[in-house]
Length: 460
Image (cartoon, rainbow, N blue to C red):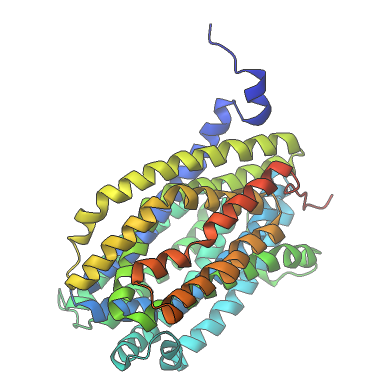
């Protein structure tokens, strides 16, 4: 006869195997989607890396406007997803549909404005990030094409992310899996001029992305109209008003959007600091960030699954269980962080061997990957604490203050001082840029232990 869990353990942690199986069922498709999405970015970097440092740097800086848009769309969809998960716990599908419609309207407006900026002011945007005219010219040619994908990406990603709130995660794996191969195929054709296509170089990578985003939007629409039955959302819901949820959505979404937007702006400001130091640092940071993100995709999967599981539990009215779920999944993230650290340390040599970059870029990238590897346990727990626990629990204001507040108050100022006042080396500046994670972790754990992060957001 199997021994039952000790009472003390059951008081603080979830000992139900069904809970972990349900979390894993959500985590794996989300993680695979993240692997695919990051694989697209990695293949862009690898393919453009064959053209040298300038191509990697131009595409990295040319993609900064998309990075900000991605953060904004993620925030708008996340704000809805927190509410959706709680309404799903109450089985109120009418309000789930109304929330999806609200988020899609805001995303359509935002992505439209970003498209206009990318089409008509690409050079002005690039000048923010680099003084190098060669980088500005190459990056502008990339951004002008990439902007055509913004609305397509915004609508499809928002819809797919809202479906996560009701536990529908497999569709994202299928859509983004096909998108990966479409993107890689057309990148190969357009960058290098293969199979009868014109050789475009840097803009060719952007055209590959545009075609892949077009597929994602079309696939999401077909799924919505022909396959999805649980929610029953159609585009006609975007034209309906009078849901009474605008205030709730705005109240919950503004801190999330502000968090994602300011965090994205913070990352872009960090890239400004990096860009002012050297193009080799930009290329090395681009390589290091893509590789690290690919290594840590399962933690992002756990974090998103945590938000869904906790949101549904709170919607069902089980506050104590939500606390135990948070404790348990933070421990899971710690274990994942240790595994990611070991994998990243082992992967440095084989990964960097793929890139045809200068010796200086290779040296800096090795150092940056080492820093990121050693910080993985802290980063992964912070990720789940902020994105999964606090946001999933409805404590979006604390999430905002910790996530981007510490970035702007600690990380960016220290990095700027290190770069421009004390003239520190690239690895030191890179570490200072991420030093805020230590503070986020300490304050965040105190908040979770207090239990004050659990908020019921739904209406009766």
